[in-house]
Image (cartoon, rainbow, N blue to C red; front, side, top):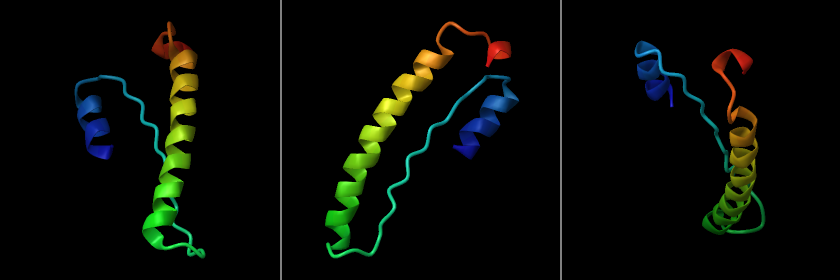
Length: 65
């Protein structure tokens, strides 16, 4: 993301990034299984968030953000 932001800045192109984190917690499940469960949850959360962000920025000028 940082490299993309750097190049976008060089060309004065606005950009936005969303990040989702799959924390692996040492639980009672094997790490791959726990990771996949967390991945499903974080992907669903990111899906909802992207829709909210797009709705928020849609039709606005940079100065309005």
